[in-house]
Length: 98
Image 1 (spheres, rainbow, N blue to C red):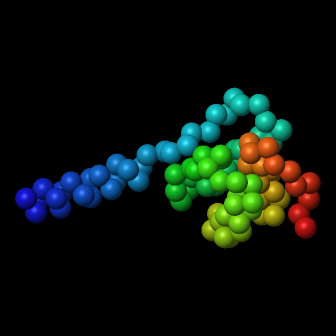
Image 2 (cartoon, rainbow, N blue to C red):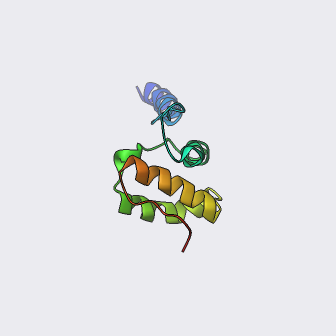
């Protein structure tokens, strides 16, 4: 029985960690296609993509602060991603970095 558990756990861990999560629709209409594409490429490098609607606009602001360093985002890239997320959540967009 222990052998089966020791075999099933690592296999299930690998299967679940490799699932894609949220899949970006590259054909969606958006004012911020670069933000969408950066979100897809930079954020999926370390973890499954969260749904853009999973967090509020203010929560995304807080989430991107530590993720900016981890994903090696420039200030401009951070703004592009945040604007896309805010557009998805009908929030106010940022025109420049303060």
